[in-house]
Amino acid sequence: MSEEKKIPYKIYLSEDEIPKQWYNVRADMKNKPAPLLNPGTHKPMGFEDLRPVFCDELIKQELDDTTPYVDIPQEVQDFYKMYRPAPLVRAYCLEKALGTPAKIYYKFEGNNTSGSHKLNSAIVQAYYAKKQGLKGVTTETGAGQWGTALSMASAYLGIDCKVYMVKVSYEQKPFRREVMRTYGASVTPSPSMETEIGKKINAEHPGTTGSLGCAISEAVEVATKTEGYRYVLGSVLNQVLLHQTVIGLEAKAALDKYGITPDIIIGCAGGGSNLGGLISPFMGEKLRGEKDYRIIAVEPASCPSFTRGKFAYDFCDTGMVCPLAKMYTLGSNFIPSANHAGGLRYHGMSPILSQLYHDGYMEAVTAEQTSVFEAAQRFARVEGILPAPESSHAIKVAIDEALKCKETGEEKTILFGLTGTGYFDMVAYQKYNDGEMTDYIPSDEELQKSFATLPDVGEL
Ligand SMILES: *Cc1c(COP(=O)(O)O)cnc(C)c1O
Image 1 (tube, rainbow, N blue to C red):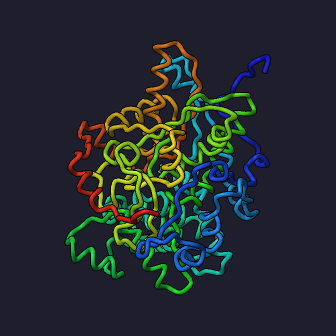
Image 2: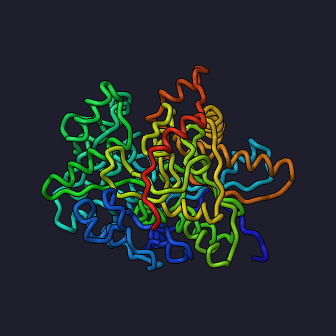
Image 3: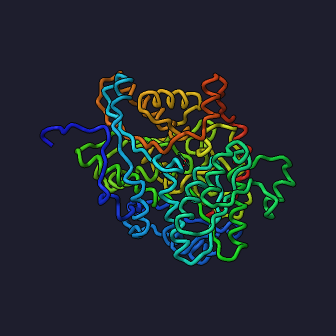
């Protein structure tokens, strides 16, 4: 481009420019993510093996390592139009406040009631469940964004939605619960006394406040035992990452309009779905040798799957009923300390991102929660959005990188994912504002203890 166009604060796409296909990055990966294994026999699981748990069309997407582009059903495209395209924002105000020559962009996914990107996949999963003629879906939720997103999608399509909510969140976030109930979902604190696994966990750990892994086991049990129901999951799985590529495809289309190429792409990583969705089109170029980008995953220091976990087959849930996935994991027994980034507390990581990280295509760093809230506050005060604690991990590292540019004078272009808003996290903000927030980093001994529970799958 000969003359640089003035870049607006927000780069919007038109409705027609919302992607009509998702991009499947696995098609361009030389080393594919490892297959899911049966937790009992340790044999790779095919379509038929997964049918009792998941919807048929979603299983096909889960197992498809070769199709580069997958059509987005028209009904889903229409739903996307209600809240997409999501804006790509040039953080001029933040740049000015930091005094950095870096150019900072963020893709904002918080413009819907779930307050996060999770709706992008929830609507797809509910759509395929409905299309298969199912009555409803079951799921777990921790912080509540995923449960909210799935409740919204299920209400829209007129199917039933049963949410198992980690007990501690159920009690601490009553408003989240009411949002889900307003959308017609039933919300049960987990572990409950309604399932075999819930009863067992309650008996073994009286007074437990639950975990994501435990809520997953309950939701899977209910789905497999109830006629006309299937289980759906909001992160980690290949299919979810595929749906979330609308984030990256839109971001790339917006940047391309102005001939902008990011140098660094940053995202927070819980199970890896927003990060995977944001980076996929860029990673595709990197994998095909067309372009190079620095890609950084940011995880909480209290739940460091990439940076301190093992790349191994592990259980996805506490009850050990789900398929085994090969991923960076802290062990399915790992219970992170009570940090405030609820959506980043999962013990494992997307098998796709795990493979890409293992093969050296991306980096990972950790951030401690007080520094994350410091970044959140700094951002909120100049950019006008109150960010989710999860998203603020990405903000923290984007600011760090921008400040490095200030030292070196480099005008790097930074793109990060702002996954959502933090209105339901005001207890956490209150702790931070009162100076009562603490940081917790698990010891090596703690991690060793939970690595000891990794299943031995032998040579494959
Ligand atoms: C769930 C959630 C995350 C983390 O999930 P990923 O699958 O890693 O993207 C991040 N931010 C927000 C706002 C969330 O709700």
